Amino acid sequence: MSKPQLVMDAGAIGRALTRMAGQIAQCNGPQAEVVLVGVQTGGVTLATHLAAQLKRLWGHDVPVGELDISMHRDDLGHQLAPKVHPTSIPFDVAGKTVVLTDDVLYSGRTTRAALDALNDLGRPKRIQLAVLIDRGHRELPIAADFVGKKVATAPDDQVEVQLAEGRRNWRVLLEKPRRNSHRTR
Amino acid sequence: MSWTRKDLLDLQSLTAEEIQTVLETARAFKAVGERVIKKVPALHGKTVVNLFVEPSTRTRTSFQLAAQRLSADIINFTAEASSLKKGETLKDTARNLEALNADFIVIRHSAAGAPHFLARVLQAHVVNAGDGAHEHPTQGLLDLFTMLEKKGRLAGLQVTILGDILYSRVARSNIWGLQKLGAQVTLCGPPTLVPRSFAELGCRVTHVLEEAIEAADVINLLRIQHERQRKSMFPSLGEYTSLFGINRQRLAAAKPDVLIMHPGPINRGVEVDSEVADGEQSVILEQVTNGLAIRMAALFLLNGGKAPQPAPAG
Image 1 (cartoon, helix red, strand yellow):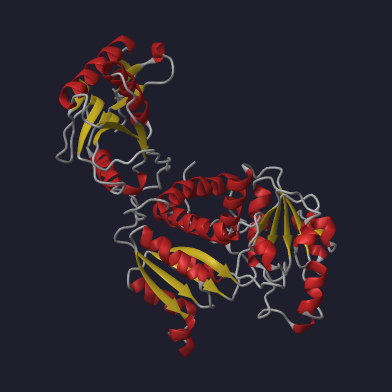
Image 2 (spheres, each protein chain N blue to C red):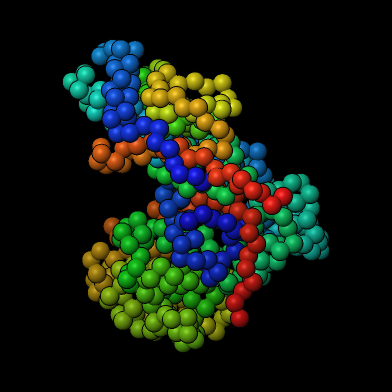
């Protein structure tokens, strides 16, 4: 991999989160029973940050759940079994507006698995999708409702979202595979 | 740490990390069993064959439900109703099952090593559901899972296995798994059923019940297997009970929070009396619940694994 390129710094991520929370609030209104469900693992941190922003706008807590999709993936058996993380949704999703969150939207297969996994837990009134980065290359008819930033990528690029504790360390990096300029063959 | 193995044949050849991977994965599958919809599509379209050449009800039904909760199709194949009775060899039976495109074969067999043999000749994933007196890896794993869940750790835990050790595949799988994860194992029972040679595996061996239970965090009681015993191993069931049966008086000498475990089926009034088996310290029914989670986790992990079993050391 070549030197990673900075796609978003902490300031840009902060502004994107504020804008996304504003859009979620505008789209749903204070009366809608909105809950956030983050896809393990990157989506969970994003859901927590969005919940904090929504609390500022609405003046009440917005419940956050964690959803693991590894048992619903469509590539099981084609590769080593993925690490399974806990699913923890301490509220009933039935009848709620679920904002599904993930850090990066790529093929759409994770989102498809998440929709199935969520469906097994109850029947939400509606499901919306919020992602920090939309990097394109969809393989399924899936689109996000709320997007932090659209980034043009090549399929073998790697996008790394760092939303760890401490806002100063937030960033999004794009790594391109190193092209060997003098290939032997 | 990823799971790479094609088969689950024993705990002896697994690493501590591999055992921990199964235990962690099982935690997520236990949560699935607590939901309204207890089914996930992980093995959708796969076929699991329960090949039980030796009778079993609870292990077979546990594997069956595990496979069904993973959305696999399952065929039950028992010795009584099979062509094994007509003289077909195990290899031919298994090849026929594979010709049906079975993806997993769960085998119980009275001959130690039968699952290892199948794993070598078949493309399908093979799970050992008990082979002779050798191993019963999913039982060992569910015992470890239960201890970890209840005690919060395995390292440094004092575990006593009491009863018929000599004939017990459950004991062997427990010994390997517990030692790999840092627990101390004490074996206890009559000398004929608990030979001193087990000390070579790194276990403490005692034939005095009081010594075995006083410091124990866990007492794993094994069933006295009448059907496997040769008559001369101990004089009578009554004598066994009078020396090694667990009742409330005897348990008073143990730690107040000692866990009582049993792989089932229980001989009530032989290795344990009802007051203890149904008492507060008993986690016998939770073992059954956890067994389902372990078997779901095992099938889930094996589904992605390709690596064959390493040759046994030595």
